[in-house]
Structure formats: C-alpha cells, structure tokens
Image 1 (cartoon, rainbow, N blue to C red):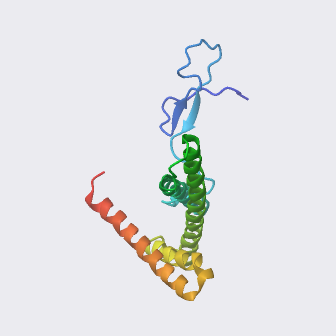
Image 2 (cartoon, rainbow, N blue to C red; image 1 turned 120 degrees about the vertical axis):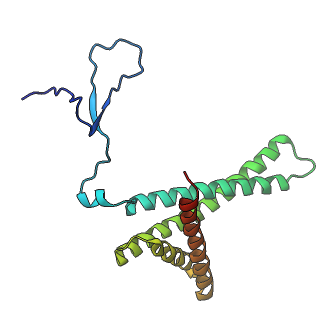
Image 3 (cartoon, rainbow, N blue to C red; image 1 turned 30 degrees about the vertical axis):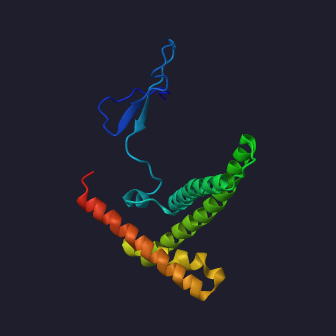
Length: 186
C-alpha cells in the first residue's frame, strides 16, 4: 500500500495547498495537499440546493440580527450617554456614563434583533418545508409569522399589527433585492 500519493497535476477538481507557503525558513519535509475546488456535501440532495440549509440560516440570521442590534443599540446608548452629561462631571464620569448606556442599550437591542432573526429563520425554514417550494412567498410568510409570534404576548391586536409590519418589511426587502439583481450590474 502506497502511503504517500503523488499529486496529479492534470486533475481540475482539486487545487494544491502548501501549509508552509510564504514561510522563508527552509523546512526539510514539505507536504503539498490536493484540496477540492467545489464545496463538499455529505448527501447529493444538499449539493443540488442553491441556498443555505436551516441550520446555516438559523446561525446567519441570529448572528446578523444580534450584531446589527448591538451596533444600533450601542449608537443609541452613546447618544443617550452624551445627553445625560451634567455640568460638574469629570471626564472619567462622562466616559463611564457613555460606556454604561452604550453597553446596556447595545445588549438589549442585540438580544431583541437576535431573537427576531432566530424566529424568522425558523419560520422561513418551516414554510419552505411545508410548501416544498423555494420562492419569495416563503420569506413574506416568514416575516408575517415572525412579527405575529414576536408580539403575541402583548395581545392579538398587537400581534396582527406586528405581523403585517413584518410581512410588509420583508416584502419590500425581497422586492428591493429583485430590483437590484435586475437593474444593477454587479
């Protein structure tokens, strides 16, 4: 059995990877690996899909929601902290006020938007699994459901309004994305 395989230079499905590339120190043993150029999937069904799966969407939307919420909340807290300055405050006390209010608002907004992203990803994955079709209506339905579920504890009326707002926002975002794809050459 041959323990060392020679790289095939004619294989277009792989690319060469040298972990020591860029290091100017002479290394006696140099390993060159052939890595695949196409994404690897465990099942053929996953390779035929043209979008992220549910677990990727859950991670992506939750993380992006938390990050955007933390940044927006931090900016809001910065403004609130600056507005709360009093005439006799020292620089150290002012910095403390700004940092405390930024951290508090950033954490709160980040958690809210992270939860909204989590609910949205779950709703979109559920709509796609239920309908077995991947189209824009899954996203709109997910926006409707996300708004309704997020505000369900405040009553039926609040949930209905939040669901309508979520559906309209997602519909506008999907329409804007389609228009950008069509009219903006990137």
